[in-house]
Amino acid sequence: MRNEKTKVPSSLAWPAYYNEQSKLANDLRLKSFFDAGVVDPRTPLSEVPFVALDFETTGLNPEENGIVSAGIVPFSLSRIRCKDANHFIVKPRQNLAAESVTIHGITHSDIQSAPDLDEVLHDFLPKLAKQVVVVHYRQIERDFLNLALLARIQESLFFPVVDTMMLEEKILRKKRSLMASLLGRQSNLSLRLPDIRERYGLPRYHLHHAMTDALATAELLQAQVKHHLDDSTPISKIWC
Image (cartoon, rainbow, N blue to C red; front, side, top):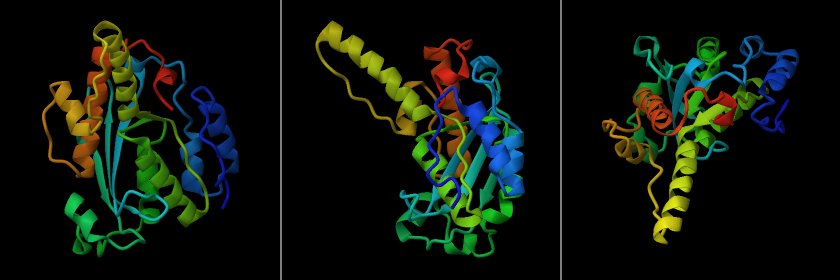
């Protein structure tokens, strides 16, 4: 499997990685994705085209489980483009476990006539092309998609992401350090998506629907930047 051992580039190395992969890619859909290029690492957050991505899966281990649905919501720091959002239901190659059905509500009848991920790549990948992908816990979206492509087309796909969970962890680490120095104690707060949103005064949504979770992630990043970052910050400072 080509590129299976490829490491995720550093924050400033993504343009070179895309340039290299556009030459190496054999699958035309993947080549088109890399040919579109990547956002310049120096681009200020206020000018970045973002797309929030969320997967629902058959389980939490990307080596043993598969993607069941995907939600994609394009946005900027000032606007969420709901009319351009997309939701895909795909048939995983792994069996649906009762536990996962309970969580995301997608049943065997829902996926019975659904296409395989490979059949929707021509529509799915362009929606991520030349955008900065935003997720909540990058090990799900980036690792699941990469391993899914390795299994189907024997090629890898990595892309820069802004991880709202990791970003919040950094924000809280600074707060904890300040609190510890001032009050001599630590404060432990949840990094779950709904709990973080509640701290920013964002509304509660029904969890575990890929489209809704993608929307929730987009709104969270907007709030995080507004409260803790300068929108002139280059994207390379928060993507990974």
